[in-house]
Amino acid sequence: MTQVVLVDEHDNEIGLKDKVEAHLGLGVMHRAFQVLLFNNKNEVLVVQRSGYKMLWPFVWDGACASHPVKGESYIDAGKRRLVEELGFTCWLDEVDRFTYQSSYGDVGSENELCITLTGNYDGEINPNPDEVASFKWMSLGELRQDILDNSDKYTVWFKIALDRLIEQGKLNQEANNGS
Image (cartoon, rainbow, N blue to C red):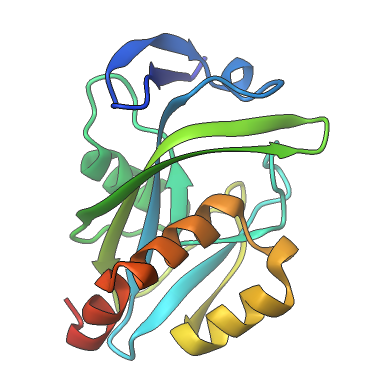
């Protein structure tokens, strides 16, 4: 049984809960992260979630999104999940945090304190079919236009993370500097 770390809006740990149970109804706030990766062409890695996902199956997302386990840092969790989902890891930086709640029909909800992690990667990608249906690299302009045209094809947390980094000027700086 996988457990998520329950937190308040200030990231103070308040308990543990079974991952599935934490996502039922309106959900219970827990720790999560979103990884955004860029290649040397300043493109963003976009991953289509597997059809096996309970929430938002076959919807496009950042490189990966998941939850740290008790005692695990956000960065260590991001590196672990990159290996498990895409077959590689890379250096990650913590660049933002936000809270959100979003329901997926009557199936369940995300209610998360979400940390945005960014990194650069140009190597081989070996997706785990249990986690990833497809992947592609997109320019930031192409991605932003596709999100405008097809908003429902992208996860809520990915759109929030991307928008926040653009608004804060962090994404453009990273993409332009390749850092």
